[in-house]
Image (cartoon, rainbow, N blue to C red; front, side):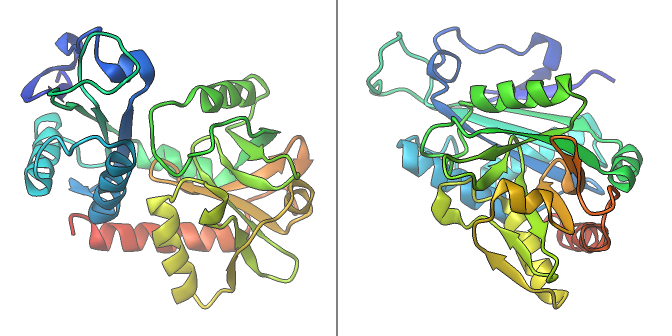
Length: 287
């Protein structure tokens, strides 16, 4: 069946969907986005993504395109019309369309686009069984990565460089040699002492919704988790490295820049946390 999109108040075939060439998301990346995983036809981490969406919009002084409950209704309708049981939903909100000018336009309604697509969970599980390789790159992104904007060109370049080298993710490193986050993920390491470490939000990294829930899963598992910086070299010497995101959930990293992590295979901690996270996500989806 053809995919259905929601664009500025109307549902229609994705192939026919369009926005104005003066939309500020297109012209300036003056827009924010969110991505939900869908489990059994229900939105995963529903409120967490909505809370982050509202925060991103506030930081950019963009109005919510509709009341929160109305937005949830539209999100679920896009899922229904696309018959998604296992998949993802993408939402983008721009400041709106107006003649090109750097200053904010007055009296313009925010633009909104929502799409959905299926995800092959079995293929994702098989990928996790083998883990992914990563490369490192200098973090050249802007200083407000805590806002989930569509201005992702450094991420695109990093992910493309990773793909060219047969890797599945890029890990950004700041000027002090410390890991910040991945091209589309948060990054964690398990030290030889068994302690899990991930960069704190004070580093202006994206406050990942999957990250937030994973921290809770880790705490419930009785594992020691610390939100503190670690270097790229520490990560390469770690017992395990893994990443998290709404699309990849929890994904083991088996090599960085060609250096095997641990024994070069997915570790026990990452594998167990992936299973625990998915179980929790399914149990709480739609809430």
